[in-house]
Image 1: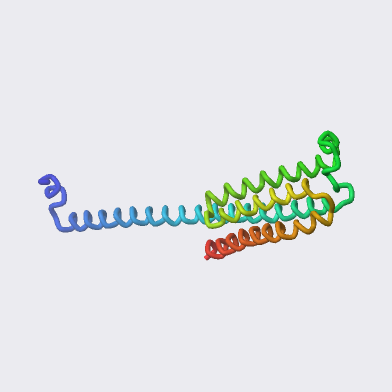
Image 2: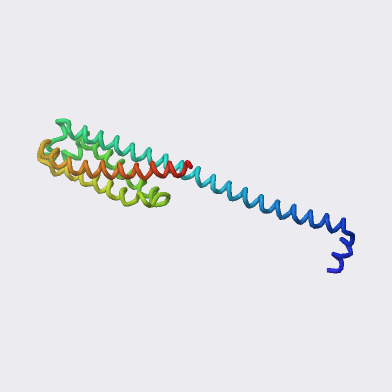
Length: 180
């Protein structure tokens, strides 16, 4: 410590030391504040990106479901029960519908994964939506006619719409809170 008093013996040297120390402390504080702001901004941008992705996926799920329902309503789709499994498997219509179902299930899984990672409050609704999609697809395979399908479809469609609507509400509220 004696060498310090020898180097900074005069009051002007001590004043320079204090000024230098204060400047260094201020610089360090500014770096930490800047780092905190940058990390918050990066997190906010990532959340917005994931919100947009989830929102787009949910809207795409709704479109796919409408396309499948429209396909079911076509006359070539009923009754599936009267076809043998080999006929149904080789039928181009059912191949197309199966592809759409697999696409829906993959997208449901992705929505569930993203909501679990970024928006856990929407996760329960993603499970409900996927279950509704599964029930609707099973209903199609079990229905004897279009009228039977439509009768049971209404309840499942209501549950599905409610789940997807709730997911969109959660995402919308997250968008609002993230933007402010």
